[in-house]
Length: 202
Length: 202
DNA sequence: TGATTTTTGTATCGTTTGGTACATATCTAT
DNA sequence: ATAGATATGTACCAAACGATACAAAAATCA
Image 1: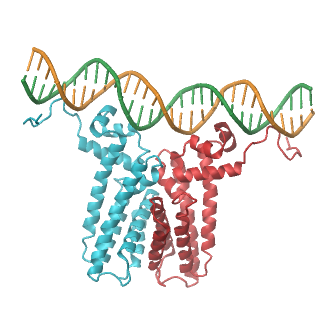
Image 2: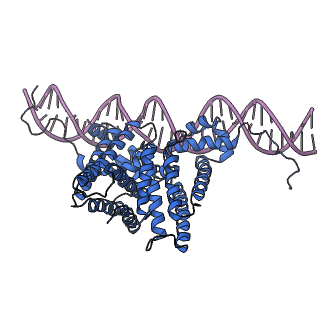
Image 3: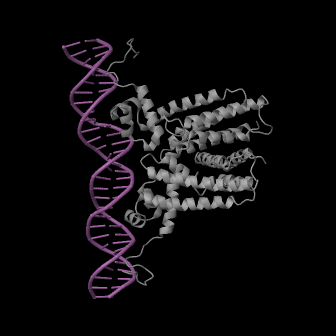
């Protein structure tokens, strides 16, 4: 009934690093989107066979969800960090510039996983789509809360709505993601970021 | 050798309206993206059988290209019309507002076909991806040319780059498309459009 | 009318998809 | 050593995919 004092569970131990394999899976999902990533692609990149994948993660959708968790955590963490800039304008500027740099990073697939996957998955994967929408809403809420703090501090232009500005910012972010997926260079994305910032009185 | 004077070619005449069927196919591609639209979906919506589709359009990719032609022609035509506003700012404003209205039109799928399809199709459909990128670049060029005209007319803020502004505008358009695909309402999209316009000195 | 040409419907091809059965291998616990 | 539990690799499944072979149907031309 009660768990034993053993450090390891009985049975044959796993032959692969589940954490590293999840990172590989994330790369595949990022590059090929949810439906575009086949189990053959995934198992090949992860270096394991199908039954190992199903035993360790459940199924393809559960694996995607776990990979998405990891991606969203890292992304939100970066956004949260960028939003710590002292002024609202500086915070948003750092978010946009970070997106310009990150979206064009050659070691990663272009664009944001949550954007590409949302537009990629058809109506059948509705649960996935909802999950992605919720995650994107979460990022928007991070920006919005920072802007509401700014308003309380008198750090926002008169008549500016934190909600509207936050939605504008994430819309530009998503647009930059589309540009990046289409092959835009880092310099081009940076110019977009600077132009987008001009809505903000310096 | 030479075609006969007959009005109709010999052989059994086609039993369906190829033009109307192409419109139906466009709706399916728009709603489910290129790879998400199966031949079963397409033929069901078009009201024809597989061999008829292949005889009339070639194959799935050729059908998508024809549907994309139709979509892009209509979209570019609308953009061209909106850009006829007398001032540059008015022209861009009308483009953005049109996108806000059109993206949330209940009779059409959410978002822009060229955006969703580009992010949806995996690396295998590289030719499709290039075609879509070229089309999007074409829209950007329409905006850019309008802004270059504005600069020649002294209708552009000092130091503003038509190329950078054009890319910013299409980036916002693509971002609005992502928002729309995620379920944003027309009012929300309109607020995004108005906020985006604030980069422009009124 | 008969020959020719094109379309249509059915039935099917080979491939790829996500997902598993099953026997074997390797661990812990007794 | 033996029993129980878990992981691994092979080989496979049913379903869906894009694409076609083929014969019957319906038109024009001679």
